[in-house]
Amino acid sequence: MKRLEKAWYSSARWPSMLTPLEALYKSVVARRRRAYQSGRRLIWSSPVPVIVIGNITVGGTGKSPLTAWLGRWLQEQGWQPGIISRGYGGHAPRYPFYVTEDSDVAHAGDEPVMLAQQTQLPVVVDPNRPRAARKLIAAGCDILLSDDGLQHHALGRDIELVVVDGMRGFGNCRCLPVGPLREPLSRLCEVDAVISNGVLQTPESAAQYGMSLVPSAWRHLNDGVCYSIEARPFDGRVHAIAGIGNPQRFFKTLETLDVSFDQHPLPDHHRFSAQDVRFADNRPVVMTAKDAVKCRPFANERCWSLDIEACPEPALIEWLAGRLATL
Image: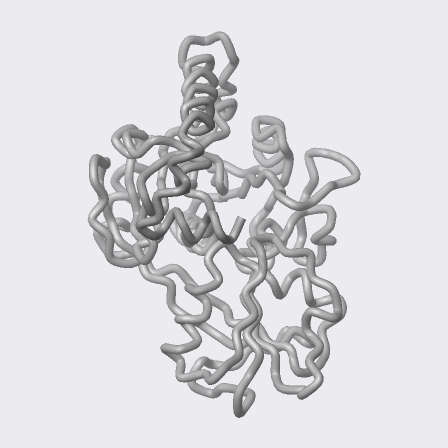
């Protein structure tokens, strides 16, 4: 998979051998979407507004930090938001499954637990997103955020936001498995806004806005105590581990903070064990917030996470406020 992903973002030609599979994939995606548009498959319409935050590429783009920011911002505006997630990587004993800060990642998945910790908002995971939505509405939520829900058409939505990684863009602009796209680029014309995490001029898209991911704190995994970015609580060279969609983004962030490190990239949603955070040299171990929720049960005193916050540009905030006023 790593070899294929590297080819997507280079000038490699060999993935073109998979073009027949790409054609089949695009056909299945288009047929499934037409089924919802034509009414052959039912779309559940929520009685409260639904905002979908998703992407059209495989891998991380920064949508979860944006979801966390949006949840907190909506709360400041007087809304009572709730977050819906598929709960990728988790297998709950029942669905819908209500997620708390202390939920077992094996049940809820890593991103839902992280979002619950970062926002203190109601979070529900369920492969059936309309069912999760009904659970949150019954709990008193008056607006819903569907994290990574762009391709889950069974849940109706009022606003679609697509997050793009400005560093990697769209690679070779081909669909799976020839390229990294979950849907053709033409899909960007149909969403309400494209939000670039970093500088990227998006072709063929709706309204475009920018955001940045800013380091906010160092968090000790053992006790949850946070330290400011400036007051770094460890010295010397560290081990940096990242089991996210784009590990290089995390490593580049550490470079901007002048942290000296040995990097250990891992697959997205990696199932961590105690051995992953133990090194013979006993140097500090630094990881992402998403990885930290999985490592917390067996973390030692040398384990730290770097908390990141999304900072949308003012124009995006103004646009969101205007759209919400019409709902």
